[in-house]
Amino acid sequence: MEFSARQIAELLGGTIEGNAEVQVSSLSKIEEGTSGSLTFLANPTYTHYIYKTGASLAIVKSTFTPDKPLPEGLTLIRVDDPYDAFAKILEIHASMTLKKTGISSQSFISTSATLGNDLYIGEFAYIGDGVKIGDGVQIYPQVYVGDNVQVGNGTVLYPGVRIYHDCMIGNDCTIHGGAVIGSDGFGFAPQDDKNYRKVPQVGNVILEDNVEVGANTTIDRATIGSTILRRGVKLDNLIQVAHNVEIGENTVIAAQSGLSGSTKIGKNVMVGGQVGFVGHLVVADNVKVGARSGVENSITQEGAIMFGAPAIDSLRARKNFVHWRNLDDIVRKLNSLEKQVKKLMPDE
Image (tube, rainbow, N blue to C red):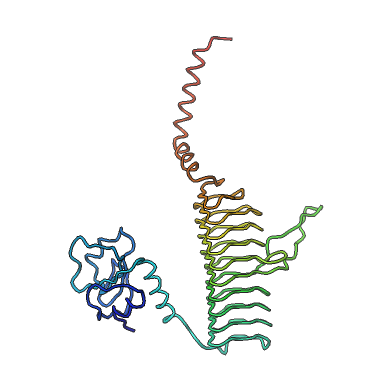
């Protein structure tokens, strides 16, 4: 499909500089722009590419001022936030190109399941007893939806997703391939004979609306009660969320992080990759935790920025890191001073 600069500008609430009727039918990176494509400039590091891009239309910041001539025929759409505007375009593009409809005859759907309207259920998907699926849900091939699961309107379950029994998935959620929702929490009681008795995990997992779960991420069901991801939570790939964890609204967590049991994460928290959280911690709202940190204690200060293992205030951590890089020189100097002091001290 083709869209004009005028149509896109109206959609984004932007202003046009150039040919309002220029047509685009594809999207491109600014350094790889071709005729008939739409691109964007958000990062100043890439500014030099706009002077040689082959794209027909570029989304730029409203304050952008070229310091040399732009390519002939390039039309600009000026907006307050180019990155957010392009994300909106990508979202629309994805909804038009990726959305599927229809229920495959090669899927299994329990007769006791309740199905909404405008669904897609792909080949070899399994829908268990008592499942309730809302309108506009997309369930790709080889998805498993266990008994009594609820899936809200507009949610997308990509190939290979596994949702165990009794879990609840909200509206407009996205769960990527290989993710497992509702597997057993890691609960084992040590016995006198050095063996372990498995503690049954009888709770569930609740994902509120607009949650995204990355590929091969695992979210364990609660021992009792619920493991909860609040509205707007975004999890990257390869994350472990243990039993009875609660993650607050709009928190984002990068890949390979792990949250031990019963940890409570606040709202709007940002967590870098490969961060580990000890169990039974509380993390305040708006906290930021740097990549590869180890959080061993609760973080009670809202808006704190933490880094390191164990995680401490980022300013202290950076100062400590400077000393750590010079540790060999520091030890050498201390040894030299010790020898000098011994020479000055009288023999005892």
